[in-house]
Structure formats: structure tokens, C-alpha cells
Image (cartoon, rainbow, N blue to C red; front, side):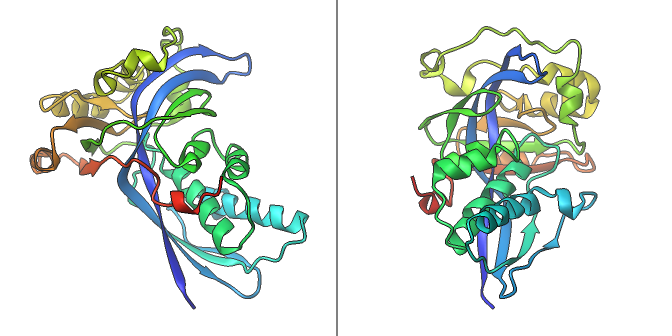
Amino acid sequence: MTTHHFPAPAKLNLFLHVIGQRNDGYHLLQSVFMLVDLQDQLSISLREDGAIHLNSGIAGVDTSTNLVMRAARLLEQFALERGLPIAGADLSLEKHIPMGGGLGGGSSDAATTLIALNHLWQLGLTQSELMQMGLRLGADVPFFLLGQNAFVEGIGEQLTPLNPEDAWFVVLHPGVAVPTPLIFGAPHLTRDTKSVKMSDFSSGLFSFGRNDLQAVAEKAFPEVAAALQWLGKFGDARMSGSGACVFARMSDQSAAQAVVSQVPAGSGWQAWHCQSLQSHPLAGLLEK
């Protein structure tokens, strides 16, 4: 039986501003999401009995709530409601993007599942339809289905495509998982940053703004603060998303590799040198 392999790339928040909060508690954000080549891999083998199985899940995450399985079930439901036959699938996820790292790993896994199974099951959903479906799984999922870098607004559902210059980064995980609800629920979180327009950062994207969540995470997790302080010796170090990963732009691949090689032994940190992506590796499978 043929096994198909599909990448699920990570993202970095080049900046992240919290500009308000809705009555339902959701925060209003402005951010630029950039795809990078640190990625998980989803492997899929089609079945003949219509069953769906996740063969390798994530430690501590129940299979039924795993975003890969939830995405597959959403597509299965779509097919059943329209009387479309599906072959079923054996799914296997190889994780490289750290959980609780602010890199969108779970959302990316879900998006790749939607793209891949829509293609393999020949369901014919368009990119727009997949994005609407993806929003039911998480606010970041539509970004990965957009297929390119973007200026992100609202709760994550308002996306304006961007084409920033290529860049190299060092991404550092300080060995802790930061719970997103804890960060957004902090009473001292900045929630009134002034709204910006794309023209405000068009000439200096990589040095623009800040991450409003970073101060909260640094206070709650000294490990994040320590990683930021160390990486800050080599560039403008920032936290991605709600943490815990931090990153800094480097001049080129060699510079990024040199910083990774200097990560203190015994620190418990993981580090990667990553290149930006102009488009999702599966963008060719997304029909407009």
C-alpha cells in the first residue's frame, strides 16, 4: 500500500499586537505570520474499508482530540453528508515542531491533514471552503490553508497575503510549554496597543513592533526570559506567538548555524536554524 508524505511547516510571529478584546473574551490581534522550514511530517496510507486511524499520536494528547484526527473527521463528515465515498486512511504524524512553542504546530498539522485528504479522497473542496472548515479547528488553521505569509488581524481569521524578503532565523525552545490561556488571561497583559496598517511596517518588517504577550510570558516563565536574554546577544530576539519559542533573524545560513552551535550544553534548550518560506509546500494542492 502506497504511503504519501506531506509537510506541515511552522510559523513565526514577526510581531504580535493585542489591540482589543471582544465581549466574548476573544482578543483582537494584529500580527505578521511567516512560514519557516521547520516542519512536522504527516504520512497517509489510504485504506479500502473507509476507516480512519491515527497510528502515532502525541504523548499526553487523546487521539479523539488530536487536531489531525479532528481534521480528518471533519472531512469525513463533509463526505458523508454529500454521499461521497471515501477510502479511509491510516495517519501517522512525525513531530518536530515543539508543542506549546507558539509556532502553530498543531494548527499546521490540521491544515496539512485537510489539504492532503481533500486531495487523496478527491473531495474537490476549494481553498476557501477548506479555510472555513479550518476555522472550526482553530484560529491559526486558515493561515496555513492560505498557503503564503500574511498580515493577520481579528482573532486570526482576517488574512492579507504578504511577500516579504527571504530570511534566516535561529529558533530556540527553552524547554518549557507555555499554556496560551494563561498568557491571554493575565490581568497585566497589554490589550490596547494602537492599530497599525501594512504601510506602517512595509519598509522595516523584521524590526517592527513587538510581541505584547512576551512580557507576560517572561514574568511567568523565567526560562523564556533566559532564552531571550541569551539569544539577544546575537540579534533582535523575540518570542513567537504566546511562547515558549524565541527567535532572532540572522544575516545568512552560516550565521544562523554558528549561533545554534553555541547553545549552552546542559541548558535543556533545543535550537534550529530555519529559512523562511514564500509559500506553503503544499500550495500547489490548494485550488482557488
